[in-house]
Image 1 (cartoon, helix red, strand yellow):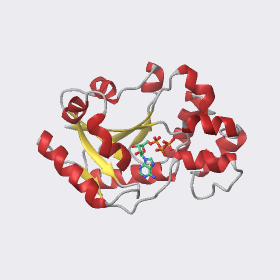
Image 2 (cartoon, protein in one colour):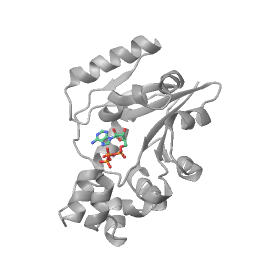
Image 3 (cartoon, protein in one colour):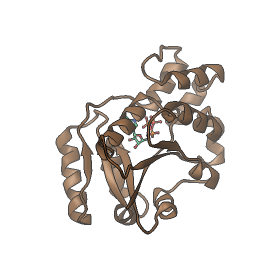
Image 4 (cartoon, protein in one colour):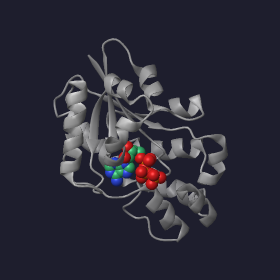
Length: 214
Ligand code: ATP
């Protein structure tokens, strides 16, 4: 059985919390010596056209930054599928696109997404189509995540993977705030992403930053 993981997000920009999450997931699903290795697709979402300017980036910028951030991870590729589709990206539609006979789909979510997954568009179908993996962002207690894990397992009859790696509490919002304020990014973004952000002056305008927050 082929295994395919999807790690979706805005990635505006991709940061070390995202990279650590992907690494932790890959360590868990592809342990040393594992032969049928899961392939992870990092999937930046499309954004509605009116948001692109306000966001201080373009979908192509986010794709380039994702390639810089995740390009060196084993078993990982950056997919432009949702960006090519355009419009609002619904996870369930992406899962339906990648679903296939003899393929097990996985969905990797940080804790904020993990806890709200059951309110997403056609959440029942998401839970049916994919195995769920959740990872803490350090923003809530582990027992809250564990309770949700039990709830999803009861609903679907499928085991949910809750990663227990040390959280790396960070958000793209915080990164955009730091860029707007001219603060240091060292250790918070992969070096290749820092190069792109600096060279192309992404997220530097305060108004852009405020618009993204609203
Ligand atoms: P923003 O601050 O703009 O809302 P974000 O930092 O939450 O952005 P997203 O691109 O929305 O990043 O997140 C993509 C995925 O990565 C989501 O599943 C999210 O929960 C997860 N994620 C984001 N930051 C972390 C982190 N520090 N640790 C683990 N997972 C994370």
